[in-house]
Length: 208
Image (tube, rainbow, N blue to C red; front, top):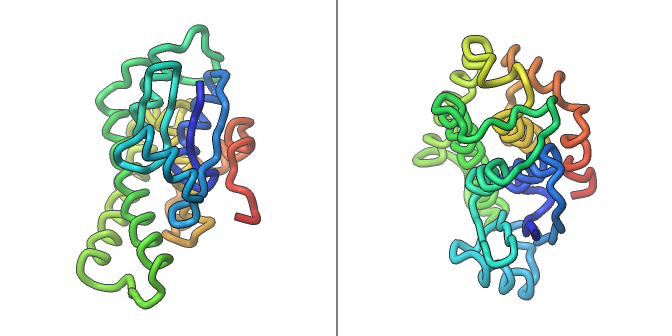
């Protein structure tokens, strides 16, 4: 089993955390971050994914792309799982909604980040950039509430939604894309899981 991805992508990191939690043996093949991949890496990615983006999982003849679909694939094929990981499959609708919201918040931060990084003359102001900011804010308002009202689905025990959330929080923190420090429940969530083995092993390197 091979997982193609960059060490900086929160989407890739979510999958890496889940794979580590499920103890899935796999080879991680690093692809450079958006705009910094080599021609060979880009060609390899295009060969496996028509969307030309990470993550991509190749399991013999089976190719799976998109982070949440890969996580579902891993969960479906998981054997015995550590008791400390919530490995429910299929995921409940409340948890799917939580993951969708986290992914939407990540996209609302990563897209402006990639656009402005690729062209310094573009200012992330007004228009759709403002919609991105509003969407991120609304998402975090809602997620902070879910940690209080749906602990069995989110925050009480580490699972897929927690993997996506921790990857989102630490990417936003590192890239200064969104300040979530005023959300008490979310800050507590981060403190609770930041030293977990799978989180530490997949953390974005300081030099990247």
